[in-house]
Amino acid sequence: MNALSMKAHKRELLLAASIVALIIGVGMRAPVFVTGASLANLLTDSTLLIMLALAQMLVIVTRGVDLSVASNLALSGMAAALLAASNPGLPLPVIVLAAALLGLVLGLVNGYLIGYLDLPAIVVTLGTMSVYRGLVFVLSGGAWVSSHQMPEAFIAFPLTKFLGVTNLVWIAFVVVLAAWYLANHSRFGRDLYAVGNAPSCARYVGIPMAQRLLWTYGISGLVAGVCGYLWVARYAVAYTEIAYGFEFTVIAACVIGGINIAGGTGSVAGAVLGALFLAVIGNALPVVKVSPFWQSALTGAVILIAVLINARDRKKEGRQILPLHLDNHSSPTAPVRSAA
Image (cartoon, rainbow, N blue to C red; front, top):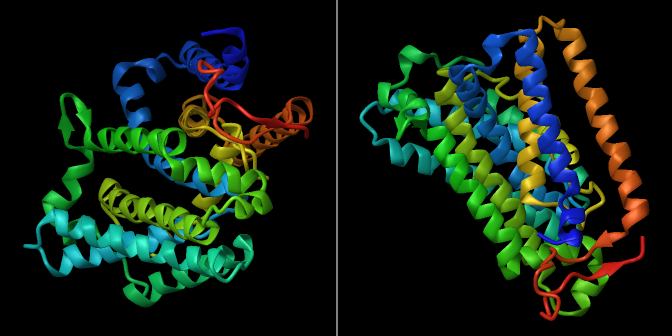
């Protein structure tokens, strides 16, 4: 890896080092935190946040935001739980597919309003956030779906192990690979960076912006739908306030991972590391017996620090128009930078 490439990945390396240092520091205070079982649980607990952060990263890169992601997750999860409870003999893939399709449709609604009607993303997703959350109440009648109402296979799947690793981790691994390919090796992903950096130029060169935004929010909804089933099955309960406020945790993971909230920059590695960082903090603070009130304050402080670092880097380095391909300087896909 050359010096320029090292500079491009400096933030991710520092974040990874911070995660390791945090784990070691907490482990010195509470050795139980660094046992194999504890770290395996930490990884499993972080998977949902990682998947949602990756989907949110694609949205933020386009200068957008999806505030409805947690409500979408809750509605899809509740629908999956009710479907499984009322049809115990229904194959699990059918239930998962139903949750994924519902999430996709909800995401496409956002994408259509933002991409084709040119409405502000924050306004659209703020509105659909309330609509989707309200539909959870309408669908369930305010009632819970408890573990004894769900089929055994429905609950067992997320934590079933394959080659010693839970299905949740395998699914997250597949999502990471898909996001990496989409963001770095597909025309769709390159178009998203172009749209986020210079929307006028992107439209001028013929990028179908409305279509790109439609499917970007569709992907966010699809991931939220799958995570809806996984969340409900993981915790074996579905209720009206599932993942309430979790959209802010997802956005925070992106910000901590270096995804520019103004669009145009961000990486898969950053989103994954940002999610892992928050997961480590969330698991570490109770272990060292920090008050839940301080947990929220400390998490907020970390987010503010990440925003300040992002702002400083933005002033010093300018904006990245396309994903870096630093090992191929002669290629037409070589990095292109503009002044801040």
